[in-house]
Length: 147
Picture (spheres, one colour):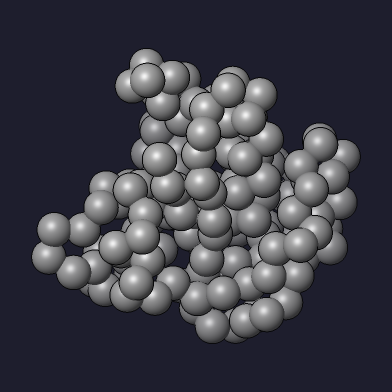
């Protein structure tokens, strides 16, 4: 299974999701390839936002090597599942998707947007990461059922 997590700039939510999925899938014994990208080109080549990196590291997710990149047409052929952090990014992905794309959906299985913490403080990053972890737990449970 190859999974792509997508937010706007690829420095906050999607790197946190990438790290959470990678760690929890390994703990569950699932072989998953996970990556992240952004719909915008705002932070290309930059590491994750320090606030998000600190929150992720405190919970055991090491995203330090990740660098921001933008979603490209090739991603629709390389991934089995593309998870958008919010409905605006999902709409953007749907507009750029080719015919017969891989599964595209919101990361949160309840259909909630994971709020962008970029303009907030540490509390917003912790809240976003709480939501990411809950969605990751649901994703891992679903993937375990498929195996």
